[in-house]
Length: 145
Image (cartoon, rainbow, N blue to C red; front, side, top):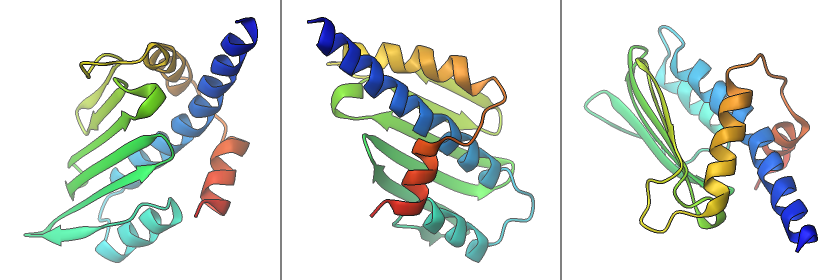
């Protein structure tokens, strides 16, 4: 039983090491002034985000990244919505970020998982602090297929 708890802790820690720099990178991209469509496409491609579409000047992307669904709606620097939802072991975890702020929940599903709360706590502890780009994030960015 103790071995399982340690495995869960390691899994949550690795997810935090991915999610914090991934989220901060996306927010930095979406907050860039005068961001052009081709720059957004290039940045999304470097983060392995697919399905970028444009309609009436609004760009959107919906992609599954590791254990998370990433949904982005971008109209301009001051007008975007970034949603990251946990799947499987993180069911119930959700981050919503707009230019106005951020909300993080751990119970946005009828069947939320216990690790969603651990992920929420760890994410919030690490997101507000200055962060380093982690090896987990760099490995994802450089090697994910």
